[in-house]
Length: 146
Image 1 (cartoon, rainbow, N blue to C red):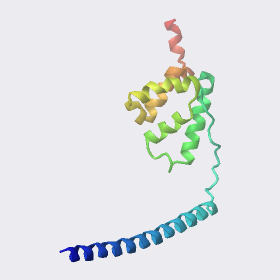
Image 2 (cartoon, rainbow, N blue to C red):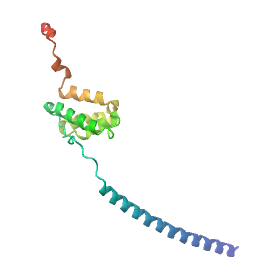
Image 3 (cartoon, rainbow, N blue to C red):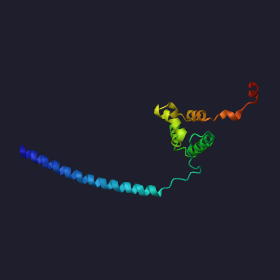
Image 4 (cartoon, rainbow, N blue to C red):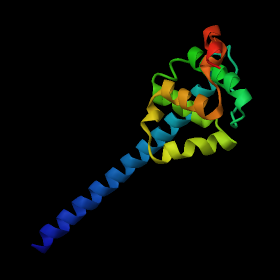
């Protein structure tokens, strides 16, 4: 019985050594592949974007229209990166600073459904920061109401 255990232990040690050698070889191959991938990635240059990366928005109402146009234009020419509303909203949020960043925190904390609806998110921003799309569409008939 002891002889059988010794043989079994010896077989296990031999197998362990073989697996350790194989593991070392695989790790070396992996290291070489990672280095090769990094080298290839340095050679590949992404196509240049005709629209500059948008600036940040700090909550200044007068800058909101510019911010929305910049971000919408950038997302349009990079539509493969912004394939759904959640990605678009996340992109906008990543560019918020100051008061605008503070404004969005409660939506994030409560995981608001608005974070997955680009149009609704824009409407909330416009309402909060004071940009009304209808301001330019003032109807002369409304003057009589005042």
